[in-house]
Image (cartoon, rainbow, N blue to C red):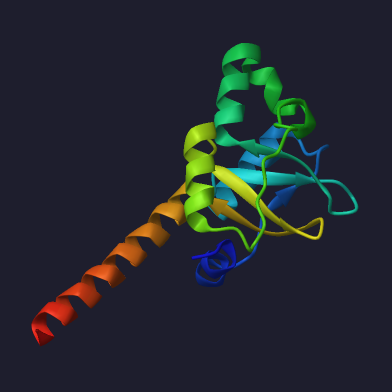
Length: 143
């Protein structure tokens, strides 16, 4: 299964944040969308970073409540690991596990086309295993 297949199941909508958005505003957006991370984009729509609830919590611990007034650009991860729609979900799962990444933007021809979470990868794998089990049960029943 490819990333593009996974996006067809879950959809390709991506909630994004601007670098100058306050951390407090980011938290509002995360809560409103019921998500754990947002891709940070510039005015042209280019990916400039990614920021997660984990980033906020760590900065709250280090800097205190003042971080809520800071711009997202101060706490975001700027070395964004992304994938392409044609990549295999299994390859993505290995990368996410090895690098401890929970959210990965999907980029095609330099444009953001989706986002995949580790939860999406797990759901995909469960669907795949259930399908294989059904096929095996059908094969055995016919035997």
